[in-house]
Image (tube, rainbow, N blue to C red):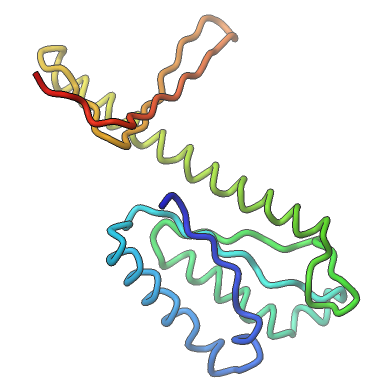
Length: 173
């Protein structure tokens, strides 16, 4: 499991009590899911609900209230972010995205996932560098399954970046 993508809330936005309790229920559900799957470090990306065509109507809408809750969740829940639905085009029902906008929304989710992935690489690269400093070259660093390392080779402005992910456990001996 690399990421949890969440796009839900149309029914919840219609009930004020559901909007009020959404954050607590969502955080509890994701925390439990992460524990049961042993996936505490898996990011959650929440997609905003659609925004009505009229910006003034949106500001007072139930969509706006629940989208605001999504941002509150992202501040409180570790490894959580929100993808905006701003400027996506809705169908005539003023609720569902048209096909072009759905594809754009998918690109936004993917971009956010890549940003999480890059942050993970940067964190692991820093940890690897700290291990190298601590070992002073005396003890080899043994990669673990799933580790991702970022190695940069560069001269002037020409940089090659190599990402190496350990897929198989290493044999000892």
